[in-house]
Image (cartoon, rainbow, N blue to C red):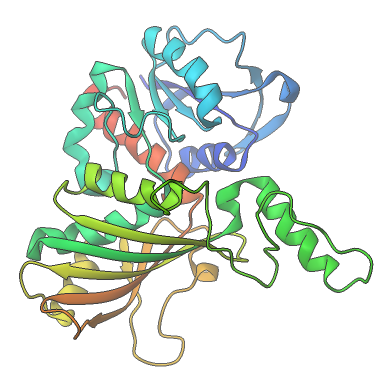
Amino acid sequence: MGYKVVVAGATGNVGREMLNILAEREFPADEVVALASRRSLGTEVSFGDKTLKTRDIEEFDFTGYDIALFAIGSEATKQYAPIAAKAGCVVIDNSSLYRYDPDVPLIVPEVNADAITGYAKRNIIANPNCSTAQMVVALKPLHDRARIKRVVVATYQSVSGAGKDGMDELWSQTKGMYVPGQEVEPKKFQKQIAFNVIPQIDVFLDSGETKEEWKMVAETKKILDTRVKVTATCVRVPVFVGHSEAINIEFEDFLDEDEARDILREAPGVLVIDKREPGGYATPVECVGDYATFVSRIRQDPTVENGLNLWCVSDNLRKGAALNAVQIAELLGNRVLKKG
């Protein structure tokens, strides 16, 4: 017997990816239901070789369903996640709403799988920020070997992280640059995104950091190790899909770059592409549609006693969101629910 699964937000970028990945990975589901808001009622979405018609989340009864993957944003999650959880359906939420709740585990299966048992307190599990997820997958095996003291990261985040509106704005502005009189003013982003980079993702906090930067700090500590110091600069770039990160790591113990490369080659969820030649590294174009977190440009940092630099790239709609959520569902099924 398999699971009864709900995907809430099935018409959005992440919801559609969740359905794709459930099918690709042959998740043991007897039933999959696609939910959306009332305005999208009846919209058809693909699930493997099947087509599902979306149902109204406002009227849906979660009773009897095992797992619900939520990709509906914090406000809607605040309304519907407690309803699903109370009905006995475990919610795996992609929004930021529950990530910092001490009673809700924040899970990246390659990093802190054992934390899954904490789901029982609220019947809710949180999915991390896309930029955090890929980074901690790369950091975890290195942390186990040499204990990370401090991380300095600069992110280069694609517009798909801002949803369909972000992708549409990049496309429209790019086309408008070549047609006089058809220029498109920024709406989704603070400044022009086409042929530009914007050093702001989310709102500014009193500290001067943006909320996206704060998220990376708080989530890395919760997932990886509270003792690790993290500072981030998050930048939006004119790329449709795929987040990139330049990561500087300071360790307690010395870690040679060759050993680090070997460790990462054996690490779950990581693919090392690191040749010291033109093009011998991963970029967002190559990572789109892939499950892996790609790591390149691994090298010593001579400016600190025990330092390494590396380049990390991943499909933010997959490992940064939908894939990680499905992996959590798989982990939940294998360790806790044990059906199928």
